Image (spheres, rainbow, N blue to C red):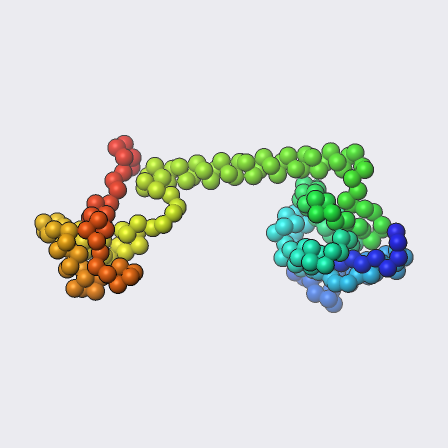
Length: 227
């Protein structure tokens, strides 16, 4: 490795009792990385830390690592130094998914022992990343399907899912007054005028239109057979 290369250091402690610059875990990780830098001629320009973060947590969900990515992508530094593989991620799937994400960005993750965790020449690692990638794709597809099914159920029950709120949803108290007047056989225009007299106006300060009153007095009904 050429000398005077720049990198960022990444530290992770899995327990709150080990977090903090005066704790053994963080001090040990930093010292190990610094020893490697001295041997390899690498300079750590900034340190990033995820205290009390489980090694099974996804890389992209860690605030410290997210800040590290922003720093790297902003200045072109492409080397991340960790004490060992377990500091990057203890869970194998989380580790390989995280490494795959960094490889796609052209980054390298090196341990204090000099191992290149992002080496793409190791057949076993390539296989593991392919499996991890397939697993992540499956989980994403499963989640999309689950969310779609939930939206379909809500739409079947309420007639809508997402989007802008109806007048009944946005102004339930006004809709209740409109329905009460409608039950007394008042015309739509008279209901609009009565609501305006009570200070119930549109966002633009105008009386509600007959169509708006109609929507408030006749909310969508559930389909036959629904409970």
